[in-house]
Length: 89
Image (cartoon, rainbow, N blue to C red; front, side, top):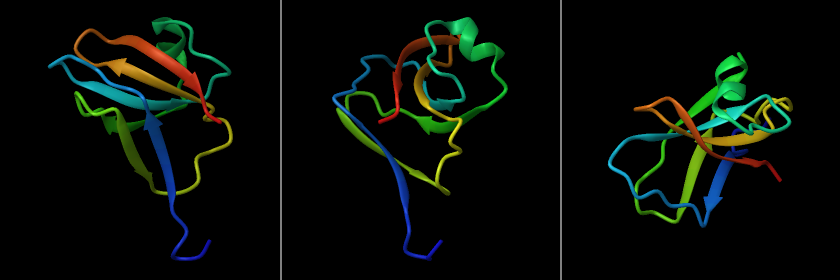
């Protein structure tokens, strides 16, 4: 990989209206339909906190994501819940 190669996850049209932290996870699932599915998988990567009120956010990735990490999850930290999920395109 060349030094100029970058990898990003761009979330568009996503906004949260909460003061509680919401983190963005990449998870190794075909889908994450509920909280339990995310809790039991060992293969998840926390990209950091979603900024409240922002409708487009970019997360810099240290490398190309593992091919198994196919689903993005918005995770409510305070209550430990899966708020939303979407497959990577």
